[in-house]
Image (cartoon, rainbow, N blue to C red; front, side, top):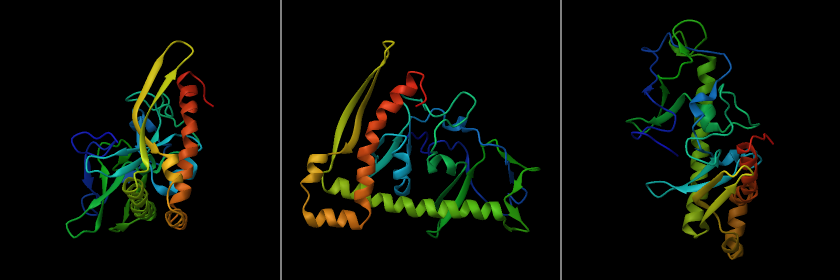
Length: 244
């Protein structure tokens, strides 16, 4: 995941949402334009998304600066490219990753350890008049309650996904691969340093570990990841001007 100045991907001016300071804040109900994600070559995905995402994107893994293993949806063949967003900001695929759908809202840890809702002031869909109010009579309105529910569920799914990354790392089940894409018009692209599950090593796990994977819901995620790697061909087709 690309971050600038330690800010989460996409977020430019995140601030804590405050019911007093932002009592009059509204959000537009116009169709979302995904221009903010137009340069996102990858985006983090969480466990519950694997089965939808594997039909459209290659799912790969990366190691973060603090050593965690995180799954990513790969959406482009080169830096600053998302082949699923057109020039008008329309989303071109059947599935939109939750990280993208979550924007412009996000949660962070508060001083008391509780999750705090924040939003990106740079998002152009916020207004002071018109649109749907986030608060009504000082309390979260229906729209805000829906957003909070989504954020809470996303946080839970993130914790579930961390279990997968930890298991893969602890058992040495990841290997690094490079991929090459050669288009008919002569353009060439390289994807280097991607982490994927090492199938031969997976097959060598003890039966007890396989059962633990299955019962913990992680084996299905691994299978979805492996299936998704065929979608590298989808990216190549899109890069070549197709929309398969």
